[in-house]
Image: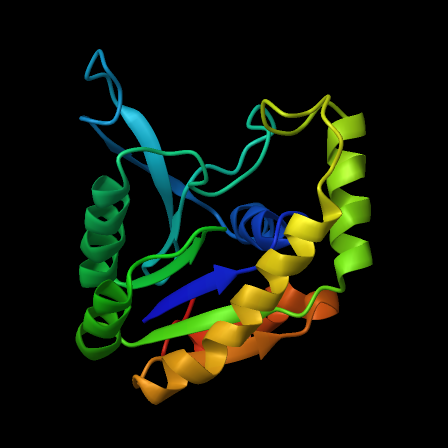
Length: 192
């Protein structure tokens, strides 16, 4: 099963990933082909019960997950490789294509999860992250709250479309997001 977590910047997506790797023992998953020098790169964590948390979640990384990773097709291959070996947690602000989501639904079981984090909380979290020096290249620029509002609306407007295409969705309570995602994986048969 693939639990694919969506949300705007500051919604808490990466926090859920951090909680998985802090709660359970992990083994790094490394691959070549991601870096120009072809050195190994950590691309995921393998947790007990064959749960793969895709991305990087450690203190030296400004944000977690795979945001900013390229190329996008390598992320798709990584998710599929991990899903072939067990369950997957992946979070990404941008979206995978509908054909990929449909294929994953049929091949692995997929639930696209949306955090219900209020916009004002997202904005506050982004400002906090910037104040700590954790953020993207735009750390000194003003925050475009209207763009965040539009992104949040677009995310939630996808739900009926995905459901009509047979892609399962679930809105996750942002206050208890880690337990919500963990329960979803548990219901799919993951046992740590």
